[in-house]
Amino acid sequence: MSKQAWCHAIGVQSWRFAMATPLMLAALAAPAWAADTIRVGYAAQSPSFIAPVDAAQEQGYFAKAGLDVVPTTFGGGPKLAAAMIAGASDIGLATGTDFSFLVKGAPEIAVGLLVDQPFSIGVSVIDPAIKTPDDLKGRKVGVTSTGSYTYWFASELPHFLHWPAGATTTPVSVGGALSGQLAALTTGQIDAMVSDVTLGLTLQHEQRGHLLMNCADVVRDVVTSVIFAHTDMVKEHPDQLRRFVAALMQGVAYLRTHREDQIRLVTKETGLAPEIMGQYVDITNPGWSKTGKITPQQLAGTAPVLVQAGLLPTVPDLKPFYTEAFLPK
Image (cartoon, rainbow, N blue to C red; front, side):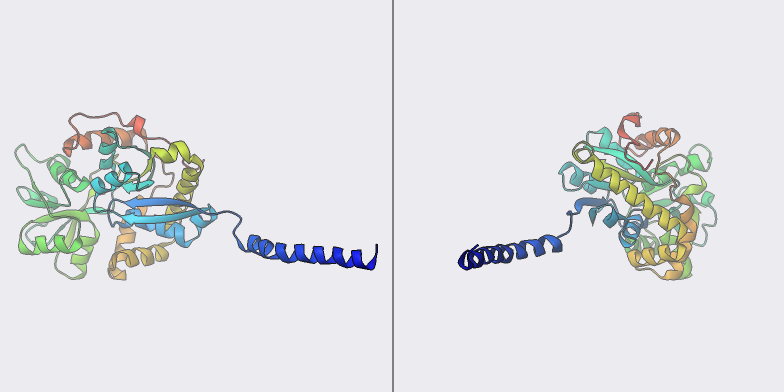
C-alpha cells in the first residue's frame, strides 16, 4: 500500500471511530431496559394500603422487578373505581366492599389480599359512660361513608353483639378525615366512631377517650384490604402484573418481620406520634397476609356484606371476580 493510500485508510478509520464513539458512550450510559410504569390507586390514606407499597419501594423490590410504581390516593372506593373505569389507574388497593363495583361491571379483578383480618378497624369513643360495646345500643355511631366497610360494621353491630330484637345503632356519615371524626365526637354529633384504630389510640394518647373494641374481635372471613387489577393489565401486561404482585407481597412480608421500620413508615404516612403508631403496629401486625390468597370462606363471607351495606340488591357469587394466577408460586 502506498503512503498516500495508507494515510487515506487511517483517516477513514479515524473518522468512523470519531463518529461511533458518542453513540457507543450513549449506549453504555443508557439502562439496559426502561422500567415499566404501573399506576397504583389507594382508596384511602390508610397504612394498610400505603405501607406495603412504601416498603417495596424502599427495599428496592419494585426496582429489582423492573417497575416504576406511581401511587395516587383517592377519596374513597367510588372515586378509585371511577379512575379504574376511566383507565387512569392500573391497580387499586381497596376494601372488600369494592367487589360491588366489579359485580356492576367495572373492568377489574381481585388478584390478591394484603390483610387477612380487620385489626386496623375499631370503634372509638370519648363519652366515659360508654364502657362496653353493649353501651352502644341506641347510640349514633359515626362511619366514613354510606355503603363503606365501616357503615356495614356499624349496621351489623346488633348482630355481632347478639343484641335483642329492636336494639340498634344509628350510622352517621362523617367522612374519612381524622380531624372530622374527632370534631364529630367532641361536639356530640356522634357517640362513637367506626374507623381506623389510630383514632382511638390518639384519644388514649391524649387522655380524651379510648378504643372501645376492635372489629377483628367479632368479624371473621370478610376481606378488607384487596389488590384489584384492571382487566387490561391481565390481558395485555400479565408479566408486569405478576412482577408487581410478587414485589408488593415482598413488601408485606418485610413489614411483618421488621417492626421498627414499619413504625417509621406508618408514622411518616400518618404524621401521628411514634408512640401511637407503635401501638398501631402491635395491634395490626398479625393481620398481614402471609400468602396473599383470598380463601373461599372469605369470598363467601364478603358476598352478603355487599347487600347488608346497601351496595347490591342480591348476594353475588364472587368467585368469577378473583384469580390466584398472579400470586407468587
